Length: 365
Image (cartoon, rainbow, N blue to C red):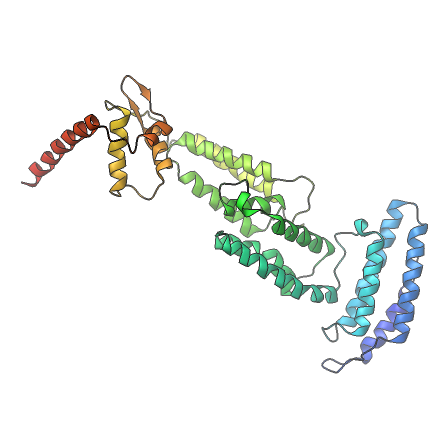
């Protein structure tokens, strides 16, 4: 089982040796190169179709592709541009790849000329995605992180492999399919995070972004129990977004989801063992729910509290207060009474506020 690529290689070496950088290239490909490439194409196809053993066929296929990549690079290297000779090798590689496209090793190095041809296409593609993400109001920090896979391909600074190309194609396809208006997430930023987790985008910058996002979400609740609940919700979302069997963005790094889940578990264990935020009981008031809701709505209207929505505000009140003899308040009941202006409630609250005002004035005398 052997198809000799040495003669093609020797022709390529001759062509590369007589080429000079910054000189005008021949408009046509070398005739010997064309003839030998056509011969090899037929010979390789015949050989592949004659091999019944899957492992042997796969080994032969990827071994030939690897040799052709090296030859292609030897023609591309002197100029850093795609000459007619380099295009012959690119066409040959494309033909051989298409015979068994699902059996190409992700570790097959991409020809430099192939990467060069793709760069402008990928740059244009990202510009379109970036405009769309900005128009959706997604966090700019996350957009910059989402650009990393495209930038890796267009920067020309790294060796790239077939697995890198197929990962990027799958990622771009998912970005193009997102229905941002109907995404099953609390925000469009979270929808993009969900997509990146699903594609196992295991870059360190995204991992850190996810940790900070979760930490901020947990910090927005004010009891230990609710913080534990937030960690549990985030863990659930990560598990739901994770897709088993998909390749990672960086095959040399650990997968994203296990790292995130491990971090969430460690934070949860630390919180459970700490004394901070332990529940010590609600404040018990003699007011009814209408008076409590009106009083705190007045405080909210006068900017006593930092920015918070009334929905969240009602949950915070319910978490902190209960009524003597009547038990806990419900957040939705408090929210529903923020705008109730019962005359008896108003009069009772006015009387209390006047007494409090008199106390303040007495201190000022």
